[in-house]
Length: 452
Picture 1: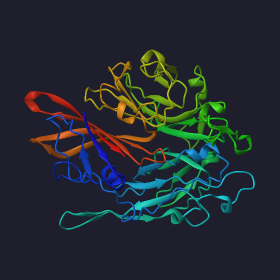
Picture 2: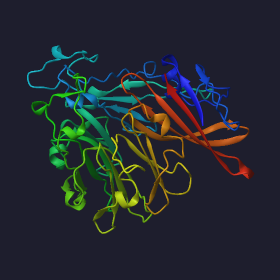
Picture 3: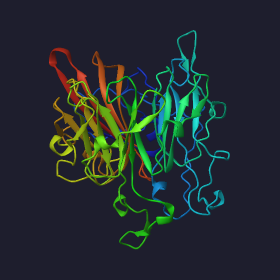
Picture 4: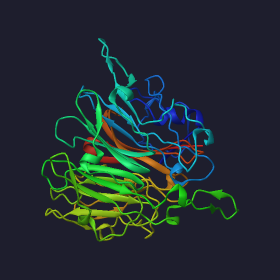
């Protein structure tokens, strides 16, 4: 496995970059540890480039920390990529925080917000410019006000999908407190239909997924709740040294999740009874997919410090929880982990959906390889994704497909990026690359980018 180490000045440029087709020895600022295999593909001189400021994405998240060590301050906000205006390119919705705590005002914040008050989630329209020479200029415009958003809660996550089948993408926003369902009117504006649709949850919701579990043509809603924490019930937690710190997830009781069935008339019914049989476990992530290839969408829930859940769709309107038997409740040592983000994808190109998730530091990111029948093997070590992530806390994750990159005339490769931020180290990127070598078969090449 090749290991590349990146200094702070180059870390963001390496991991957040626009795809290029150019090739070189390795990205600028990277030095080799000397253990690259001979078959390692030549790295592009610039794989990703950080372009938020120049493209108009001037968003800065505000977590409202005031020194009280409120648990929700330790979680970042979510983001959704969606084509809200149906113009063919992806727009960006970013979830914002807020000041929390009885009697607390902005003046109590240790780090004042950089956006004007009142704080709210932000919607950025993609005004991509296509030049005559084939070039592209990426530019975003903040359209929050004209879109009618008044999302002033403490945002956690967001799910995008067309809940009313009118051809326009809607948004469900999870909050530390009441959630919101925003209906896209199709004219550039959104309306809050939370109360009318019956989809609110006033607890600490983090994850959400829109998917059609009963195959009736309407997107249903899963809401993942975390723990029973409020600022009034905040506990004082300390390290062994006596230093005050944020309390862990087991300091508070976990909250149960919710499942809502879309009736198709603008309202949802509570279908949570369909997922009884597993204890509440403090959800931080959820992903949907047909894991056993039976034609019905299942979903997998990533829990913090407690066993994860795999809900298999029975096809009759019910689910059964199979995580332990399927091998995805705990890691290969039999330990629950602090699961944060989770994504599903066929990274090994065998026709079924595998799982990848991020965890807290001193655990590892985990890869579960699916055998096609919803039985999984923890392959974190074998794929090379476990050990490099041991010292890092991961949240964001996504499978990304790389195209138009060449290595000895090989035309395609697939990679996984994992983003981590533990407050001190900016980014950890891990690239498992599957190279189609034609008559020589496929090669799995691992390359790791770690921040010093």
